[in-house]
Length: 310
Ligand code: UD2
Image (cartoon, rainbow, N blue to C red; front, side):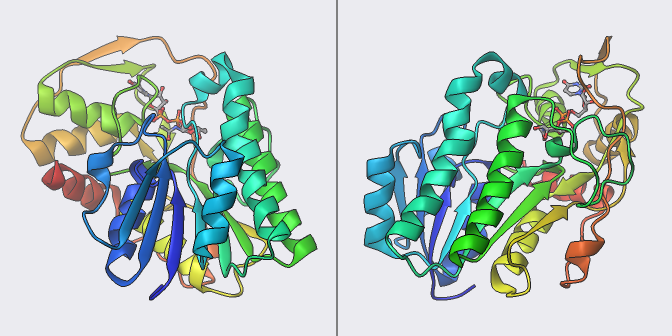
């Protein structure tokens, strides 16, 4: 994308700020973030970056912003990303994880804004307990948390509303994304940010279960590439795409690789499996591969990059 006006909601967060870093050179970027999990330091320093510390749930604010800026691209990345948080306060998080996204669609429609593409970031969480592996976009969904329900509903809404009113939209289902700027603050943060935090601070890392559980760990740069590809490709319209590597890696393997890369030994503790956790997860990404996507970061290469940037 070049010479475009881009809105990134949640742009001070992990995925949003990495996307902003990538796009800032050739575009003008507006970030709306309430800094609940994101950090202002995550944002690139540039006169082409306009930051608003604001909640996306403020309809009046969002409406004025959208009309004023006439964005070419809108990346809906703001969300309460902690599943546990959505379980403890489902109504509040629903306003952020679903209502706010619907409102953006509505404002684009009502004001007839000429958006080139709206991209909504969903999650592998929509597959929930469905044991089928690998997970395809056509696999049965089985959302089991308010987080997953809101992600799925927003996905459908963005796609179907887009079809109805001829607004180009796409949704992405991210698997376990990792990399620089991921916040290790919450115990429900991504496991790789927690491991790297333990390594940096020589603190104990707790494995829930036996460490043999597997995930499709996806390096942030591959996610940013996927987002850019989907925004620019006209075939990617009113569709949902998995974004991952297709390779499952166990926690034990990740720990081994991390120890080798860092030259440090991680002190481990073991606790019971976390309630509600799935055992194994990996994606089929043939759909986005057909558009030219190819994940470039193996777990070893990705962890090395990550460690070097810490
Ligand atoms: C990911 C998403 C979640 C949801 C879910 C859908 C993240 C951060 N979370 O949860 O939002 O989409 O997928 O399936 O991307 N673990 C430990 N010790 C720790 C923390 C975690 O052993 O201190 C284990 C955990 O029990 C799990 C694995 O590491 O087996 C991955 O945990 P996670 O929270 O990073 O991600 P996940 O897949 O549970």
